Length: 230
Image 1: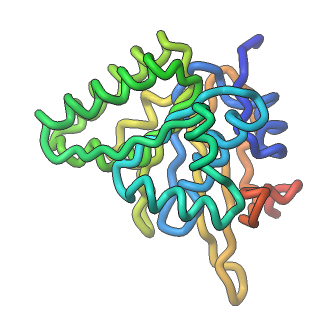
Image 2: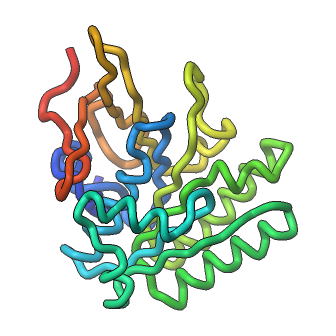
Image 3: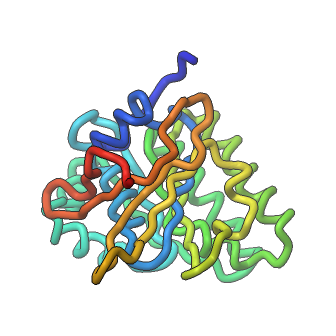
């Protein structure tokens, strides 16, 4: 199927997905603590800004923008410089109630439109959905975001948390709205934990659903070991 693609910036993963994720869609990046979800998303933005001249926005709903920039600098990624160059914007936002959530969503959509962002990261959608008690409300929220962002031609990564030992993803409805899901995990192997990922959903894309191991290193960020787990 001929679908426009947006490169993630992780070479082996882009290869597995025939060039990247569907352009203008929403992809869910799900994982537990320490799996590298924020690095994955930052790599997506950094690659777009430095290699493809695509503006990006990173929405921080958990840690502060300053903490994010300091963390990324340890990988050799200068987000301050990209902000000064007008290639990236980092938003510090907080959703503490349903009323406040509406303001947060409007801010995200307005900033995306005015900045003409082609890439957007919301870290994390879990922080947004905590203000809702019913799953139907969460689904309506994510669906509404999807419609507006698709009209803007913006490709979005939603970060969501998965608890240790949980078989579900996020609030249990995001996966039905998202165009794709990339699952990041830590698995016990012998005497140590190792990281692995799998693409468990990607619309309009034939893809390998096996687990692949990955490492995180300075400059390159996430790199996938080029063969699936046995």
